[in-house]
Length: 206
Image (cartoon, rainbow, N blue to C red; front, side, top):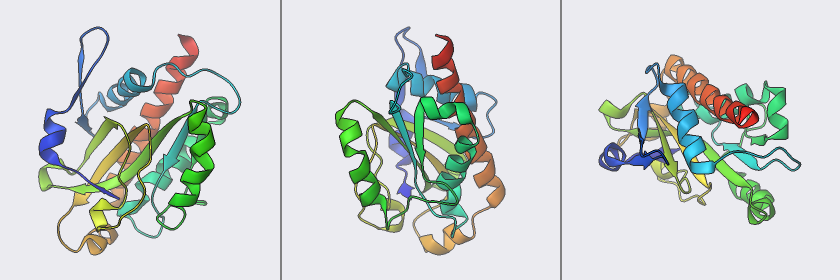
């Protein structure tokens, strides 16, 4: 569970080789959400080669014990349904086998040797933010700082990361997460999963 700095995200953009600018965030209900995320991933991570072990590890962080914090595991479970992804990406963190505060360090340890061999790590997590940012999906280059939204000091993870602002932060965060709308979490998980799938599928045809 991360915490979003709204000012920083508003200014953040990604410049493609063509000179096109991609915003650092987009609302889940935008018709361009899937396309935007796929393009952002491609601009940051490049084309994925096929091979074993896969060149991308997607670490979906969270727990099924909290509605708001279940975004990551739901994304992981959705991705696992697409069998063709296995050649291109390893998915860690699902509803049945979540990656959470208790085992995040162990997960990072398991991925260290793969990262040294050039494997990209994409972290996915829920986050809290300001009222006007709820419903936004964010993408950024560099590691995720999980736990900051609930004042936990957890290890950083990721070559790049995706977060979904599921509710308002700043007060009684654990209660806020428990009372987050499942409808919003599901819409965000679907958009994130479809964006990742579109990115990997595009790698197959280029």
